[in-house]
Image 1: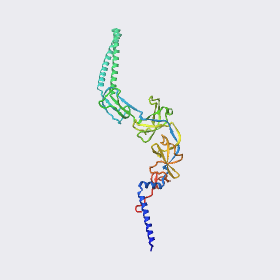
Image 2: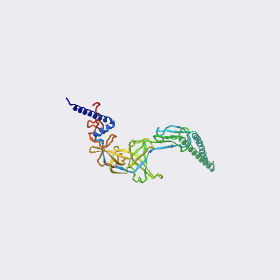
Image 3: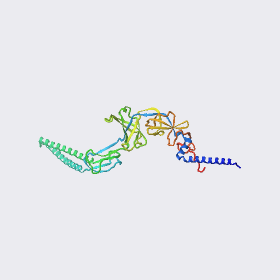
Image 4: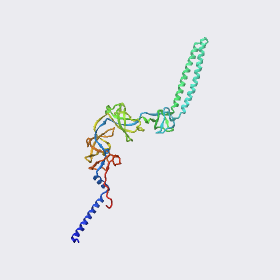
Length: 398
């Protein structure tokens, strides 16, 4: 049988252990779910594959003048009114495809048709007058040969014949002109393309020179850009151009086709025409803003992939893996390579450093890193991506 003093001591020890366990349980219960996950991530190593890492190397970085401008079609037509008339009908709307010769706009041809009818009647009368004058001249010519007509009579007949012939030529010219005017009341597509802009509606008065519709060929797009005059000596036809177009995520590649021999008098910039390297991979919309760089040369420098960078305003950083530990390193980047999209690395990392290629927001500074086999070569069935071993939480009640 235990003595009273020993019994009291055992009871106090039991109560102390119970209180300690309760306090520990209270502290663990007070940890938030995010804190638990952060603690688990810090205590467990980060598993990465070779595909998850980007190795900083020295590469050729393209350099050259910046070019800005817009995408414009090489084949385009601003169809204008060639006669003064009322617009009767507009048959095509913006965005509709047209074939060469399709009727786009019909103008009122009432007055022009009346003029053509009058010109044709005048031409027929001139033909009759000329035929009569010609017969009279030939008859007097025969009589003069037999001595039955004077020379003066023959000369007068010849003059009348010549005047009738001049009137006939003038009447035919007026008929042709009236027919051409009549044809101009029908505005047709000059080539296969798309109606890009409709300028008139039914009932409008179309004066000579008024713009009616615009037709473009969407398959003939080109980059029409401007280059600063102090950089134009580095631009030559045939050079590669990498550029981006507003509204498109991809980067396009082209070739310098032509350099304008004269600079703009106001901006002192020189126009440069760039054709797409792949004619099947080009935008179908004109007027889009584009910006890029002409590859006039290249320099050797350290580069880092755009996906490996973490942007925070003007600052940039990367997650470096060194000696099995993950660290966040501040870096300074320079110009971007228009061909690959990589950035020139000015400071922060050295040649051979390994960084996370596509970092996630859950990475922790100082976290341990473990290399594992690539996806498909081990039991890891997921694609190559970052994987963190998270300890299972104890089951409730244990």
